[in-house]
Amino acid sequence: MLWNEEFETLPREALESLQLKRLQHTLERVYATVPFYRQAFQKAGTTPDQIKTLADLQRIPFTLKQDMRDNYPYGLFAVPLERIVRIHASSGTTGKPTVVGYTRRDIEIWSELMARSFGAAGVGRGDVIHNAYGYGLFTGGLGAHYGAEKLGAAVIPMSGGNSKKQIMIMQDFGSTVLTCTPSYSLYLAEIAAEQDIDIKSFPLRVGILGAEPWSESIRGEIEEKLNIKAIDIYGLSEILGPGVAIECIEEQHGLHIWEDHFIAEIINPDTGEVLPPGEQGELVITTITKEGIPMIRYRTRDITRLIVEPCRCGRTHRRLERMSGRSDDMLIIRGVNVFPSQIESVLMSIEGVEPHYQLIVDREENLDTLEVQVEVNEGIFSDAIKPLQDLAARIRKEIKELLGITCKVRLVEPKTITRSEGKAKRVIDNRSK
Amino acid sequence: MKVQQISIFIENIPGRLAEATKVLGDAGVNIRALSLADTSDFGVLRLIVDKNDLAKQVLAEHDFTVSKTDVVAVEVPDRPAGLADILQELDAAGITVEYLYAFVERLGDNAVIIFRFDNVDGAVKTLRDKGIKILPGESVYNL
Image 1 (cartoon, rainbow over the protein chains, first blue to last red):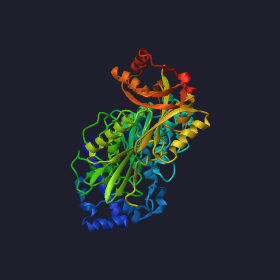
Image 2: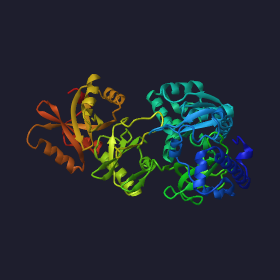
Image 3: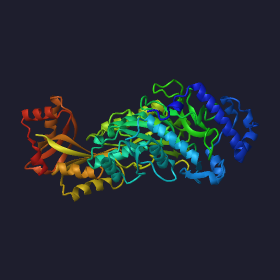
Image 4: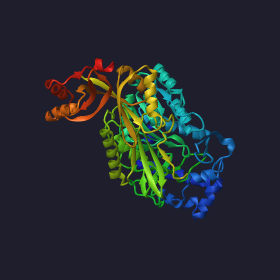
């Protein structure tokens, strides 16, 4: 469903001229109001009036997560605090969190983009949205909530945790849409199964899942176990929160990024060079309508590719290929770049293996070691040793073939790998200790 | 004439074997025979117990991965070459033994050995044709 037909199907030329106009306006504003940006422009020897085309954006330096930390908490805000109506912060695993502020208009736009996103996922009035994203400093809960209300659907503000109750509410209230992380949706399916509740028979129709990288094979697993369509949604608090980009239900391939509000670039993460459309690299986003804390060329660390081919859903906004990982999730093991999602795809290609795995990276005598822990379930266990050893050998061989690195595969008992109620912890890197 | 065996996946970490056997003990399940096959990372504990379904249920409740397998309990004369004679018959019939282990209890003058065959039905037929005694499940669980 097109929530805002005019803007979602704006012809490319009009869309790009709108982008340029909004970009120029944003640049002038941050130059005037945010010392950090003024200094960055000056260092690069440029001023907003020199930006005459979208390609000129490349002359402006990147903004990094560290810049947000350095300007903690309000240093990058472009409006006085009197105009801020909401403050969110990202979970800072190390040190201070990153803080974002929204004006009333920012909240309005965010709700609109989330409503568009729900619409793209085939959700509308009459739907009951079970929102299990966390409510709080994290943008997920409130972002999805406001979008759902804007859309006119009934939203249940569940937040995360208390999984048995989640299942009861979902069943009793007849939820048709589930919003949470992909790993939490699988966790809910598992909890339901443990209680002999047939989650497949629920009226649940669509899952709008995001906030962590996941693979096509996990999608298959979720769709099968919950009997829903699983839609990938993308967002990050630094840019907005959920609703920056989403897959349409027609294609379920590539996430439309709302280009009337964001400019997406793909760069080589090592050199910073902008890559031609279609090439894989790090996603860089510039916000062009945000008031509270505009972001200029923010390096998301997410690895993707722009799909420029038109989509049959009719939206003219280009698509981001499913994120294949984060450049900072990327492990460098003996000099080889390894994304956890690559290991996941190997595991999921093996019959009977469930996506419960963990990667343990360590260093022995100055050599990096990788141990892949995989849970043994009844699907792959019999009474004999050899099939298990063969399985471990096969996983080792396929990882070697795909990545060129040797790893140790350790079969572990079920439920030994921590189940997350939020984001899945896939990697334990002991090298930094 | 098959006997049901329960196998449990056990990680090589301290206490896991004790935990598995405690779960069975607490549920009042008695272990009749057992064998543990191990590798450096994990082991497979194979058991003949008196209450199969209960054993599988309580183990699953404690998050153990469990499977059931059909095995054959054979009476083996307690004399030199008692086992060798039986194995020769099976070999001649082209039946492979995956593994075997013995019961502690004797049955009269004979030993009882649990066999895991690649072809259980073929093995049962061969043993019967050769007049070798095999024991039904019920008599083994309560031996």
